Image (cartoon, rainbow, N blue to C red; front, side, top):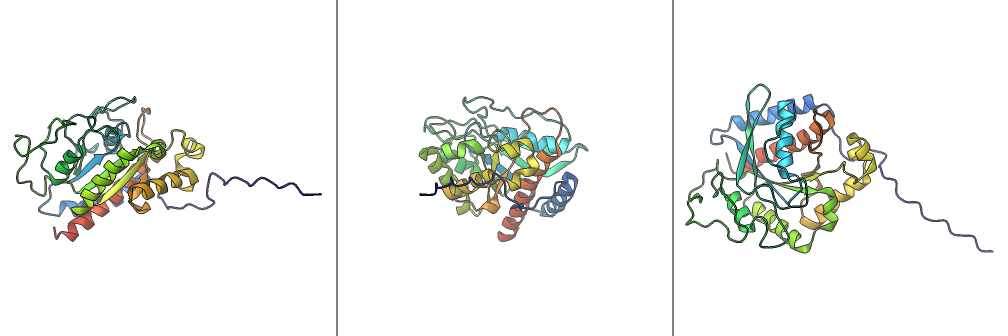
Length: 290
């Protein structure tokens, strides 16, 4: 008689050990981040370091800007218009957001929100305009034209951008569930933006959003399980292999989108990403002797 083969067991949804260590106390992270930001404030040639948020429509760029402001205000903030459907980008203009804490202190970094990327060339931000923003050539409030990028003949064009006009960190925001569904056109656009940033020496960080929205039951139930989740790590690895950034530059986050109160675990993931960004920007400034 032949013995019936047993079916291979599926891999467990979680790892036994954390694959990334995290301090789940938001106060500790705020203190560590504050120390990094103090170094920024001591750089004479820089008023505030500039973080450009870019990525596909609906990924959560504007929502992340609001979430960061919420973390520091200690309450839910709504300032940037957020896309809640599969429609077009809510953001049409070049918009900069200051971060002001609950004590009315302005932090030494800003978030730049731009029009989202789309698969069709006639929709979404033109790739050349992302390059213009990276170089600091685009004035505040400029309305993006998907089919015609900003030219040097336009009054919104900055001909001699200073270091305070330029971007100091590129942050790609992408929805965890959409990573496996990205079309080649979108992939090529994202690769081109990354290449432009790296060509300028600008650090590139990735935020994987909506990690608690059905991607992994463990994380949906408890955000603190994020660094035990096999599925979340696989999503991060997939993006790394597709677009290029190493895992150390990729951070899972959960934006504030339906909550009416602050949540410590959401704050920790957002602050962890900001801490890494601040560190990479500090390295960038050291490299260019600022």
